[in-house]
Image (cartoon, rainbow over all chains, first blue to last red; front, side, top):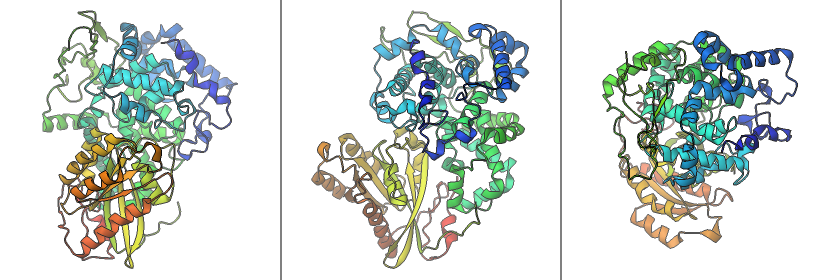
Length: 414
Length: 215
């Protein structure tokens, strides 16, 4: 399945004149990214500076990623700084897999993806099919009915819906998978999705998609609180106008800005998101509001909502927005919110795994035993990447991996 | 952005929700009504979207604030907050996919558990352009609507058939209901979106629109 990588290469479509440097049809306003796409590979002759940058990155990674962990352990701050400047597009797919922990999952679970795709059936198949053509419909890779892009997207989503039958398929996941598939093979994209949702490095995101969308509700609530604290005048204006974050920010969290943001910005956000965690979603949200603060504060309800879904191009320029993003410190406050939220909710631990069904079926489950100590340093999202995801295969058919990152709704090592 | 114009004038402001299974065409119905647009490249709606349009009924200006919702079951956790305070709803199904019609019973139930019993409901069979693969007959849909005390119409957002009528039908009916002051006005402070309060006695007062509950 990995062999599809070469065919999948979205770069081959770039010859077409009707798409922008990222493969989106040019006529579509929301993704018309040309003006902003200086970071993208259209340029066959990157300038010297860019080449120097790529060389630096290659050195950091080593052959096939062999030096990466060592480098990250030794110089985490250099890595963080470089990632914030943007990962070179030609290395993005590989780096994303390294920083998300998905590479390890892939290596530890040979054949699992194939099994999920070929031999398993999912209750969500029809739902997935229905949404396939509605995921990045203006992107050339996903436009052809039953084409490679659509098939890959279907396979990844179906595999995930089997892998985690509790979550299954939820609208929005397609945008995550769709984004990943532009940079890596199906199997790689699948494991990156697993790493994110199950929490290989950072807190798991599966709560964004579980019944009741608990993590969406939690994040929206926290975001509202942050707006009130960091931008009190705008917060007050929102209250006056009865605008709350569920009206404009659900998509930000559910798709990590991949749903409708200009691609150059979405990619730069994803670089940081995969390394530093979900806090960057809050930071970007706050930065956008701050960037447009003086306009937003004058707008009545309807215009306000419109503005919150249509930020001006200037605000969407990564080089303008990101410095502002990084200047907003939210980690500490988010930790406090989380503790308060947990205290209030007293939600059950994510222990209630579905019973294993009869032998023969492949259940891929996550070992959800928090607090075993091995991962106490995970709680700090800015710490070096630990990578001690491990695999236990007691019966040859059950793959588990453990991570200490699933702390969002339960006991946190403190 | 140029100077901010004050919101347009209107006599009444009604909040309406669009609900129904994923992929039945809610987003295109709304874009057809609000902006006379249709797109074959519509993305799945994540969360809620919002649009408005103002129409004339009996010489009055009626403004509709319409909330378009994600159709997948799991999104009800977010979208159901938008039912509250709605005075009208379009429950949409896809004429060519029978299961989406069958599911309207559940949508209606869900809707009624969150709204005033007098809410005006229009059952909408969309994608009427797909005549050759129709899976629900007019009679059947009509009978079901009658049983549910809902109005019924068939639309095609693609061919722009009946779309405006479906929305104006709901809005006109709400206007009549409001005119008779039958609608018990909910005052649920936990309701999320705006427009929860239709202030019948405060026409022309834009503030009325902005005095709804928040979370």
